[in-house]
Amino acid sequence: RVRSARPCARPRLGKRPWAAALQSPVMGNIRGKTVAITGAARGIGFATAEALVRRGARVVIGDRDVALGESAVARLSNLGPVSGYPLDVADPESFATFLDKARSDGGGHIDVLINNAGVMPVGPFLDHTEQAIRSAIEVNFYGVVTGCRLVLPEMVARRRGHIVNIASVAGMLAVPGQALYAGTKFAVVGLSTALADEFGPQGVEVSCVMPTFTNTELISGTLTGGMTQPVQPEDIAAAVVRILEKPKTVVSVPYSLRFIAAATAFLPPRGRRWLSAKTGTARVFLDIDTAARAAYEKRAQSATGVLEGPE
Image (cartoon, rainbow, N blue to C red; front, side):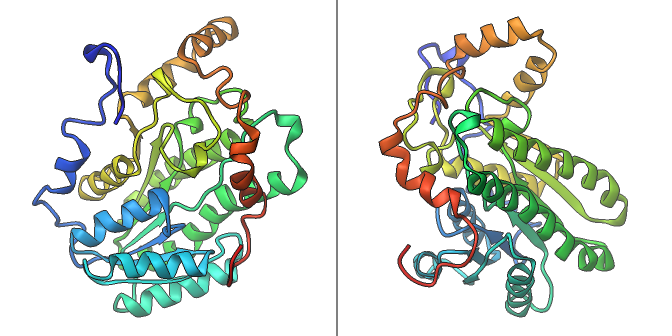
């Protein structure tokens, strides 16, 4: 939940809180649909899987951590039809195999693909290792491109389908310490927008959801507060639910941040840096607790390949 000392300044997720959105009786674009979600064993992906299976979707979880994926399926299995398979989004063969299994579970086709898998390396740009750079690009962007290329032909042939790419507000508003991450998310936002206009006339929806700071492992070791107060994974899940029911190309969470980000892009450098300092984003990804973040950064730097056993 986003907190503010002044209620009138509180960012709004939408017209309704996420809990109300998830309880809405309108489920026409979700119930009975086969939804494949990448990186869904934890965080935003898991929250989205839970929200959709509760609304009647057949959910197929893909994750590189086999044990965690199995645990996620077990936790959701009492809610509705859910299955899970190993997935390395950076490997086209692994992605194709995952989607084939998802089709088998879903009656031969995939109605929705949610490209959620991602990593967030932060800190001084020159401190990133070559491995961290390649891992971020391969997972955050190449993985999304691969997923889109693998499902679009069947969706075009059926003249229906929906791809939802989980990006970030960093894909419109980059801040110091997030240069590498923002670069990959700018790419996802641009890809999604172009694909939406190319494939919309062919009956396929392509959407992009842009969360702000979210309360997951991705922000471990960072000092957030004020304008950088994180939202919850369930908030992002609610946005996905809404975008499937009423398709839009780009949605931010909270909703107002998209317009703030767009307006900030037109500021001169001095104005942009002044605003960044005032909102607390100038140093939030530079002044990090490296010890508290070490475990996540280690995992993020090698976020390719399937983990068959303990990491």
